Length: 254
Image 1 (cartoon, rainbow, N blue to C red):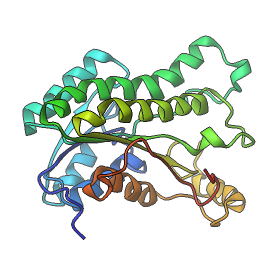
Image 2 (image 1 turned 120 degrees about the vertical axis):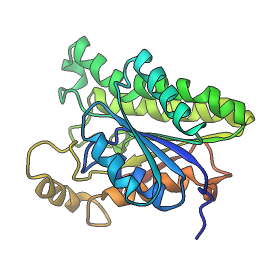
Image 3 (image 1 turned 45 degrees about the vertical axis):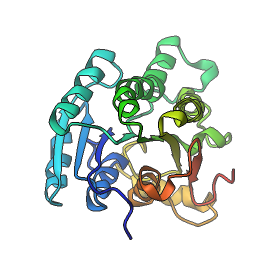
């Protein structure tokens, strides 16, 4: 099936982890037709992701940068545009849990870390990319949120979940503001998956335990999240904007 991605240029943040959502999203964008995929992360392994994209026969660019820093974000976006001439798709995947302390016990500096990583970073990358999309009167932005925004009894009532709730609102506000410019913005909210968000070496074991509480009986995979993200990035969803899609096996029914 043609997803309408041919000739498109995509930028995927948080694509350095080799077991994360970002890498799988970047690879699927390339496999489904994007002409070029730029990937960024604060870790060196982002270069490994770029090399795997090139193996699909598509162009790739790895840019190491800190997406919580405005100057770094502006520089990396300019590097992508200088290399490929445009940005058609922005996938804001980068995020993390800076602390697991309940919000009522969190120190201000811990709170700030989660909000900078999960919410401010999306604001900065979106602000940097929007002028290019506005100029071409088209674009697709996909933010990665979290099912934790609707899971109040699983020990996730911390700054991470609250910052991800902010991602939901930022998604809708971006969608409303930019519809007139032909730019869509949607959000994919994953359920539990064996990525680096799960602490410790036994990620599969923890996911298997959590799966007992999930209606479909399993945790999410990187491919599950990539499929939903690429759908929102593609022309298959050209009449959808401002949506929050929970890809969580039924653990969030919203």
